[in-house]
Structures are given as structure tokens and as C-alpha cells.
Length: 599
Image (tube, rainbow, N blue to C red; front, side, top):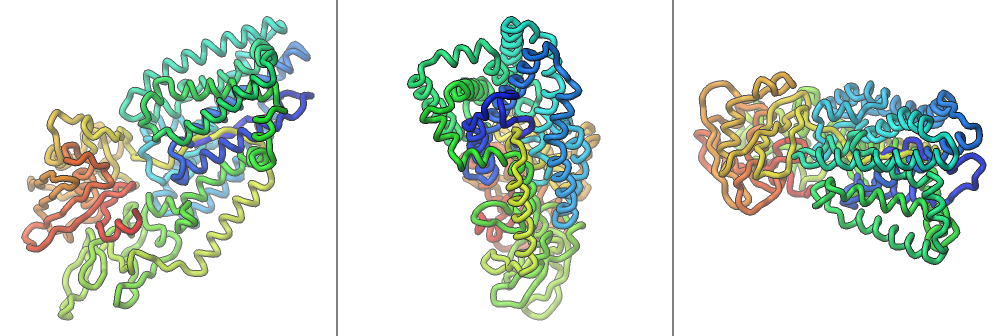
């Protein structure tokens, strides 16, 4: 996600406030929030703009102090950063833990408790990298996932002042040395991003401090005297025209970049975006009164920039904890972490033509998504996995899948007054804190939780995604795919169980033991799955392992994404039509008649 840590409202002490830079922050935070809400596919690039702004403003402060006094008060610098940034961060951290305790699903609560110490230590990015929690394929279970970029900035604050102190003495000569060190460091960082960005899972390239340093360092170059002098010599009309082109290019890149798989993104694309941002910032700082400067520094983007730190800190927990979608935004926890209706207390829904029903079983006994999946019987009651008793039309009781029993009415849930009060309270909290106007920092895109093992990929031709059980439900482990591999090979790997290394990372299987074989056959946009069991013999995690492994397998004609592959489940010894099931973003099996309305 984005991190707004350390961006300041003034370029240096004693200098006039530069309104267009606040406006740039406002545009960037709007892009990131729209990206997280699913409306701007390239909005995650706003993180680069924040990093460049932070590098520019922090380096300007450090060099100004060196020029004035010939020394740097490092303890004073770090204390000012802490006083400016940590109170809001600590408040949001404590509030998020309380909100998670009150509203989150058990898997989300466990994840936030695991992540909290790392977020407090400003090292969330390395925690996610070390635990192989994939950024791009992560499910919405990590309430502190957006703090990875704040960790990047804090690590920059700790190290970069030491470099400026060592290289920045001597007036103009010191500025040139700082510029040279920053430029070389940016190129080294680019090389590292290209190296790590070629991996199947690009989380290491995206969240690493070393791989993201070029954005901060390009901003630092723009803050040095040689760069400022060069920007100051550009005629006003020419500077305004260049600013218009650069700003238009940035906005266009946010609009056209198709997510992390955009060609060249990690092979220089983000570096080019950061370089354009650095040039734009340098020109706006030199000519803030031009047409572009006045437009970017208008009231609305400037005000957004002034409160962007608060907006950023609050928006991701709010997005995940919303019990339902509101105006198309939020409710992400409902789609990615299980039935938000259960977590929010919306237990009761109505059956078509029947009486009220409830989601069966305690939420704590179910993996993510448990409340959402189910196959409909003739009374509109959905089932998928587990055991329970239900009355058939003849009045006799028969065994039915439990863990996932839910009555629905056209896929809609009824939200009561209590849920509306909770929603209004959460929205009021984020707006109230944002209105206080905390200093802006930098953020990063959605890292909302991820598989316990990582190894995720969207390239189905090169990898098998084999789903195993974790404390958070079923999550994929990456396995090499030999040429011609298909659903049968993926399921064979699943039945063989996790490897020793995967077991050491906490992966297990919910499938019954024994030597029974699961057969699979690929069709266009679908996989026919023939089980040696009756589904009511399996719990939901086991069903999700089978369905999601088959849906993610290579060799399915039609080139569809995993979420669009229909898995037709045939049960042992039961005649009749197959169950059409899909695999949702959480790695949870969802019957097609329940999943379709939300697509």
C-alpha cells in the first residue's frame, strides 16, 4: 500500500510553503484509494510518487540544516520524525486491534495479532517478504498490510541522514556529492528490482527497501543544488508545458497500467515513473505559480494532500472491516475473508419461499469463506462440506453437509440496524481523524494478507497451485509444472500431500488418508472433478483444496482466469447432475449459484 511517512509540508525551514506538492500528494492518495477499491488498475503507482516526494523533502531539510550550521542534529531529526508520525500511527494501530477484536473474522484477527509487532517495529515489509506472504495474490486478511511502505520510509529515515552527513559537507560541493551518491544508489536499486522482478511472485521486488530505494533517491537528487539550479533555469512557459506533459503521463500510467503483470513494470517501468515524478516535483518547486502548479495546488487536491497520512492509515482497515459493500467500495473482507455477514452479526437470511435460516456452526470452527459457500437443494438451502441433518421433502431426516449451510434469497442478505450503526461509526471515525489533518507520508498498494506459504503465480502454464490447509483456510503452494501438465497432475500433487518444507511452514491437508484417486478432466472453461467420496464426508477446507487446485491448474482450454473456471463436482455413488463450483479469492469453494450474483 502506500506509505505517507515523512513527507513534509515545507521544503525546508524558512522557505515558502509549496502548495502544488501537497496537491500532488492529494492526487496520489486518491489514486491509491481508488486502486484499493478496485477502480484504478494502476493506482498503486501512486506509491512511487509519495516515495519521490519524501526523498525530495527529507533531503531538502537535511541539506538546509547542513548549509546553515555545518552539522546535522541526527537525534533531533529522528525525534522530530517520531513526534510527527508515531502518535497517529500508534492510535490507528491500537484502534485497528480493537476493531478487529470486535468485528473481524477469527483468521483476520489472528493475522493482525501476528503482524502487529512488525508494524510497530516499522519492519512490516520484511516480515511479509520473509514469511512469503505474496502481495499481489494476497487475500484481504491483513489489516496492517498497508504499513509495508511506511516501514520502507522509516528505514530510509534511519540510514539516509547518515549518508547525507558523510557526503553533504562543503556547500555546493557537498550537494554534488549527495546527488552523485543518490544517483548511483538509484541505479543499483533499479538493478536489484530488475533482478527480483523477474520472479513468479514479485513481492520481494515490490516491498523490498533496497528495490524501492530508487524512488526515494531520485527525489533526493531533485533536492540538491545542481538539480534545483537546472530546474530554475528552465523558462517559465517551457516548465509549465513540461509539467503538463509529465502530470498527464503520470495520470495516464495510473489509468492504463494493468496491474502487476503490465509489461516492463519491474524492468524499468516503475523507475521511469519515479524519474518523471522527480522531474515534475523539481519543476513545480521552481515554478509553483504556473498553470499546472495552480491547478495541482487548488483547494481540493491540496486539502487531500494535507490529510493523506490519516486517510491512508485508516482506509485499509475500514475497507476490510466494512460488513457490506457501500457504493461499490469496501466489503473486501466479505469477499476475501469469509462471510462478513457472520462477522458483523448478520446471521439470518431468508430462504426463497421458506422460513428463516442461519449459518450453521460457530464461525471460529470454519476457515475463511465458510459462510459463503453452499450447494442449493430444492428448498434454497446451500451446502458444501461437513455433516448436518436436514429434513427432506418427505419429512425424513437425512445427512447434509454442515459447515456451510446458508439460506439465501436471490443472493441477498438483510442488514439490520446494528450493522448500520457499526458502519456509520467506522466511517465517522475515519473522516474525523482525517479532518484533523496529519502530515502526509507515503503508502503502498493492497497487501491485504496472503497465503502462509507464498509462491503464488498467475502464470498457470509454469506453475501448479496446490492448495493446502493453513490456520487461515486453504492457501496455495507453488509447484513446478512439467510440460503438458493439467488438472489431473495438480490433483495428484495435492493427494501426495505437502512436502517436508511445506509442512515446516505449517501446511497440512484436510483430505482423508488412503490411496483413493481423484480423477479430473479439463473441458473448455471447466474441470470435471470425480470424487471417490460423498461431499458430506468432507469438511469445507478439504472441498476447497480439491476445487481450487483443479480451478488453478494449467491445461484448461479457453485461457480463463482461475476465478472463472467452473469445477463440476461428481460424487461417488450419487447419480444426477454435477455441482457447479468456483474458487473465490480466499481459496474457498463457492457454489456457482451463490457466487454468480457477486461477480
